[in-house]
Image (tube, rainbow, N blue to C red):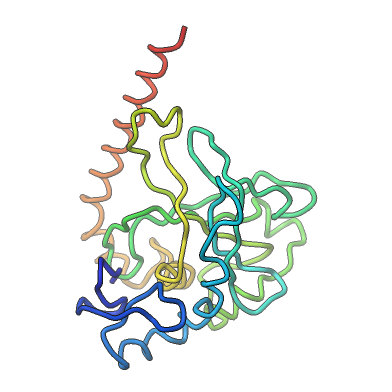
Amino acid sequence: MLPVGNQCAVCSEPGKLCAGCKNIRYCGVECQQADWKVHKLLCRTFNDARDAPSPNMVRVIEFPVNETKPKFRWMPIDFDLFCRPLEGDFFGPDKPVPSIQSINAHPKTGKLLPLTITFMFRDNLLKDGSLPNKSVYNFTNGRPLNDARGPVLFYGSIPEVEAEAGWKIFDCVDLDTIRLNVIKDWLTLGTDAAPERRAYQERNSAEATAAAVANRDSALETLRKRLEEMP
């Protein structure tokens, strides 16, 4: 379950802000302890990453190859049609074009997320000599669904709604501690390979299809208007 407003991150009861990060809410000790194993990985570092070091940067969650846990990182934004972080040489000095996979729904419940979480990784990681990603393996208790190699990062985005925003159809948004459990469930369960696959598909397919069609139609309409306005 994802927290909404003042709701607990574990259940739907009203919750109080975590004293450490002041970013996530819990209704009491029981829920906080249930979430602590994952939340503690980023709790104490969130305040250091709370404010962007400069304008037009987005906060992502990085999984370093040779470290034991994820961390926050600020990256400049590429203001293209589909807004995303400018990764530079993050994926290696050869600067490969990274592969991406999108998380639009919670892997366990099938509930649509309020944002899209995108997973970025080296395109040829299984054949280019990339080392196993220690932080991913540690994060998933050594049981990631797929072989995790090379540097990995996750970033957030939402559909662009401002008519005057130019060519952007999606806008980057900062990730925080609240989304960490969604990322863990996705790394360990995936979607099609999850044990809850049938229930996931039954709950999510109609809603996800409707949302995808709406996003597509909105994107096409925006492109059509921009093309008409071009000299």
